[in-house]
Length: 193
Image 1 (cartoon, rainbow, N blue to C red):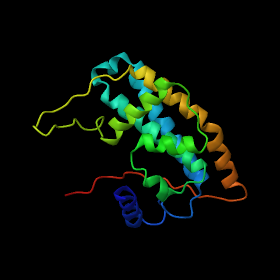
Image 2: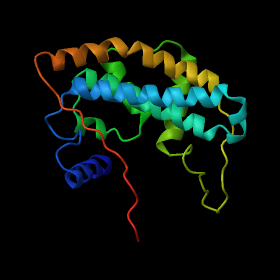
Image 3: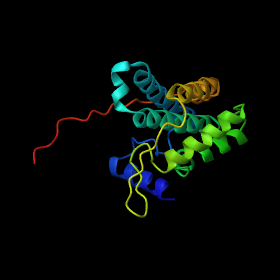
């Protein structure tokens, strides 16, 4: 489980304030993942709607949307009581996260949607939208358009809206009668060499 181990090492390095700390409840984590997914969806929408950004290409937009989909499914799983370590073990496998979420009641209708989730998952898991793949013979692969980015946006935004109620219910359940501190991290000034 390299992803989980990497997350634990990172958590140990930065101290107890990381979500890997057992003190954080799944409802709070679900809310954080849901919010982060909303930010990625919003950024993708800006790229889709902005003619001036058309020269950027589709890879950044697809990356934002597939990462939002990963976070959305993980938010749903956290809302259903999955802890941080269990979520980390999913790594970036959107299909596996979706399969687990489906097992806990999430329903997404339509064969087209199922197929699109599977395709996006494979590309996301292999980081195709982050890095251009290289074949065994050294050729660089530049992925073309799968489907219009606006169609992917509609699917991801729809799933994100559907899970809002269970995520917020889990958050409200977990905060009832409790207080949680919020910490803001700033990048700060780069250190001098």
